[in-house]
Image 1 (cartoon, one colour):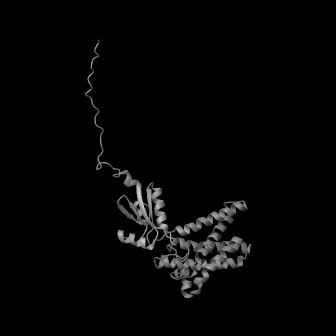
Image 2 (tube, helix red, strand yellow; image 1 turned 90 degrees about the vertical axis):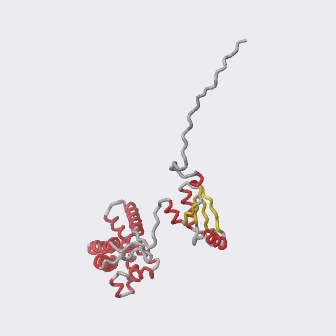
Image 3 (cartoon, helix red, strand yellow; image 1 turned 30 degrees about the horizontal axis):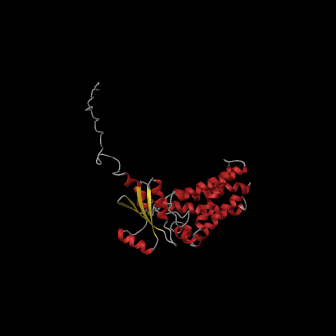
Length: 277
């Protein structure tokens, strides 16, 4: 009987694969702590916390698996606040770390958070943007996008929308307006009439009607406004907020505010050619 040779097992072994220690890794310690988040927010019959909803949405958009915990009673909410020594909800936890409320969560992800009392040109830029789109839409309907009439409509729409924002709360507008308008400081009732005059001039200029009313109104309030803003900002060097988009405005008084009044003045002068032509 033939005996098959016995082949000895190889003594060669594969080298160990390199292992990365936790201290060497640039990744978070565990995937679970990075991928999961816990939110505690108020969800009651008469109150649904909007910042809680925003927190959950932000976490989900960042790729987190959210454990969404509802605080359904005032007692439950107070007990949670006492337990975690916090004053507000929602509260977000990532792993074992408490991040905080919605603003803190935005900062955690490197997103901008508007500081309380901070100024912004966004409201007035939104007005001018919408006005430009409306003017272009009407220009398209009339058969020409980039025409003189489109530019006229842009200014008239801007005046009308700005007046609308002021008329939402005339009392708050007048209070802020009195900080810098020279005529309003002498005759307080003018601060209440101003938005109505701006709206009247804007609407009449859109229609191209009764320009004998629209032109002097626009010239009058535009000129007084321009002089007042120029004095407050460039002569007195005062740092104020503009009432151009209403009494709750965060727009700083300055070049944009001056532009609003110069637009009204320019529109009034330009419209004279229709009246006398």
